[in-house]
Image (cartoon, rainbow over all chains, first blue to last red; front, side):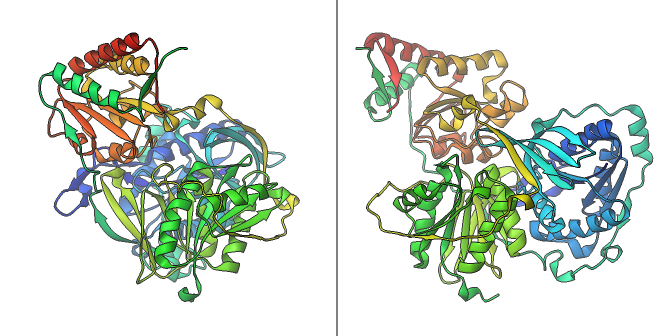
Length: 274
Length: 343
């Protein structure tokens, strides 16, 4: 079983700061981390490998320092990692990103056929969730998104049984391998990495590829050039107009509110038992 | 691609088990405005099996045209089969805009379709407009964890596509007299060629009655101080028959499970009454609750941004105010000898 997990280095949006004057992101303010959903994707690959054996490869696209998230993935239990990094990838939207990643996946697949590709549900800096399904289309394998459990991997039959989250409930899906899964956080708990993994990760040197290391690349589909979407403008969201702020002591304010609520018969009423 | 060939605004009508998802009806309302501005027809496209009966509903909620593909292979949603249908329709009729609900299925389908049609897709849009002169969809979405909004454009590719968050747009009133046209298309789909099978669908009834559907929500923030004080939020909710929500801070502190988080990374809610208690009103939160009918904010900081969106604001310590509210509501129900209800 060869599992490839796609991971992304993201700024920690919990502590990110926005420059209020320019409305732009102050990237220096936020530490770079492994996208939390991708950590669950790596963990799930480890769980599958425990049952089926095999090898876990990690793939990322980003600046050279993104090797840090590959090392992090090795800590969780991945065997090896690839980073594709090149100025030609800069400014890629989801369409161009899935193209570049699929070219790297083609090379990985040629060297060792891929059975399952796992991605996080989305990256917390972009929140789109579009790269995983895009990769599946480009590789022409079935995607299953919003996965909350991998119930069974049948190596002989080359199938997986998956629980997929729906708006209200879930569905049980059987997919043929190779396939691509995008996983939700509830799929597993991230385990504390065992000591040998941490030592491995510290020593590990990821394999780094530039565009020239990939085959049959159409340069027009890479980076900014290959991105149909652009950011038109950034703005602070308009806030709905505020209403009435009460005045007075706590008791006075509460009673003013109660008076108003009792008048709002269309919203709020008391049903008396007949 | 000749961009001028592409005309019309399309909405993906998501149906599950023969019932149209609310977000699709909301998008018909939003799409109607875009189509009128661009002076083009609004179309809904509907895929499934045994779903022809839903077409009139799509028209009644604002569509001029319904494109329909009815096929046994489309009985349950699958990326593989639905994608084929949508690509067939889009290539044949060349719409300029396609909108999908940002549900698990809508997002999944849109991503696959965008890759094949080689076009741009904006995720989780919360505001839509159109630049009529350039026929450009202006799809705005919260960026960087919701601190700011970004307007995404797709200038050189068609169709322009976006997924749109449920509950942020308003559906039109149902108008059964509205005229419209139904166009049924046939495509060939073969079950044997499908590489995924839906074995079982499990509807979680308890999940359906969740925050997103609540009529009244009492939402607490980190300003409650500690989990014990947070019990006051539960107590108020219980008194008035409301659901309990929390901010991201509260969920991350472990005071509430993730399903009860309101905001950009949690649920978007549209209750009739929303109590925002001891929370500052960060944009990420406001995005998820600003469409509530009536917003009541309680905060001791008179300058908290939550007061900018609140219909009514009480400036004061929640630990003092909330018990008073609970008392008042209890008194009121006791006087009237009944139960609160929300019409």
